[in-house]
Length: 282
Length: 282
Image 1 (spheres, each protein chain N blue to C red):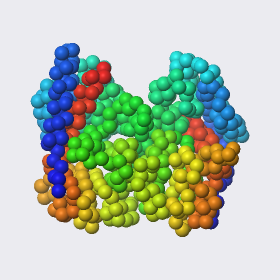
Image 2 (image 1 turned 180 degrees about the vertical axis):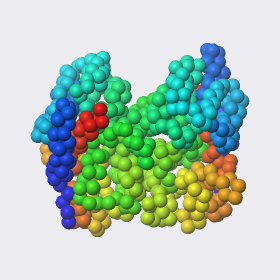
Image 3 (image 1 turned 30 degrees about the horizontal axis):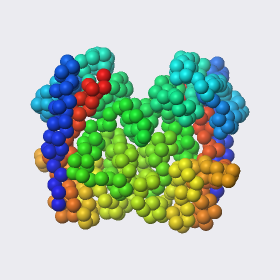
Image 4 (image 1 turned 135 degrees about the vertical axis):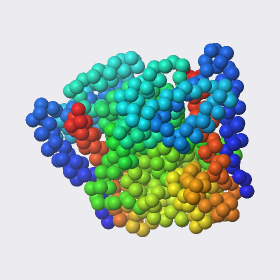
């Protein structure tokens, strides 16, 4: 059984980025990410630190725009617009969800498509549907992209494979399903209203859990030799875990991602990759 | 067995629109569709006539923008921009594919999201992914919407149903899959790289054929009591047919759409509905 750890995937992506960044710097361009955070949520701050470390170690830069929890919609819109107009910034990471008094949907649509390196806008998401055979001018959200990077790194060709995606969120499940279909997989999206989720999962070659809830996928969903990918990040009794029962998963899987240390470890390198690509395309 | 004809569905949609149009006219607003056509393809002209008939009979209006086959990209872009800026126009129908010398992708992104009543732009498609529980500010493409209208009219609740969508185009298969997932169906998208398409289809409660090729779905894909929906419009020996073997379909189906006279008969009424909604939202 292969344990698909995220760290070597992230390192491989970062190494490619380092070379590109060196070349961009010769032209006077430093790939730069704007991190926009409203308030001081602990999980956001932790992710922010990870992203900064990743960017700095690769020679890229990060500019932070921290607004107070009670900032107005207008304040945030001004911030986004100034970042859109700043030629020294190539990508925007906006922590979500935004505080309830803000119109998140409106904010996301303001983000310039060229700098939307986390596929937040409608246009970013829509380019996934339109991308087959076309020119994808935009970036997919980082987490589903991290899943694709994992599969590629560990040599798992999804062509013709049956994949059960568990979860239909607009940030992971749905965009990931579309990306996998465009990579020639046969994808079934399962969710809370699915009647035979156990059967759907057992019949799949690959299960990808992105339900956002601990223990949604367990022994009864597995069959021998499956590739099991867990996108979930949950906390149970203060301990981080995914959406799958990992102890059961390792009994069945031909390859499995741990949590922590799996998909989640790849996302900041995808953020870097997209920012570098954006800097190359200005 | 129910033969799901499109005509009564189209009539029901049009009747609702007529009432809304009457109210809009009291405010001096006439819902108006801009039809943009480059060249003189017979199929486009036939569809255009159908759309005009539908709009005029309901009291709505149509303005035509016909460009010669050799019109330049600039000409078409100017046309689209002038339509975007025209407050008297509420929706845009652009015939595609455009001639090869044009950048169709670029044209589609120029269309104002408010007037994109056929979900052509990235933003229009992306709002489908983002729409669950959110505010869908845009319109889904007309053909997949026509399928949803058919299901609703004939009282087929898709919640928890297993649906095989055959075809993954950006105009029908992919957006339809996302729309059905958001309506709580368990959807599997099948395509040319799917290994066991017969089994995937036989195990489904509903098959929706949108492959764009005659006889892609036949007896070997059917099982007793299925709902069979055929989105295909093909011509074999000069005769119009769908993607399914209709003679086989009627032996198995609990409900089936004919071709012609099925889904295709509903699309112009969806075009009208979206144009009226757009006129209401200005």
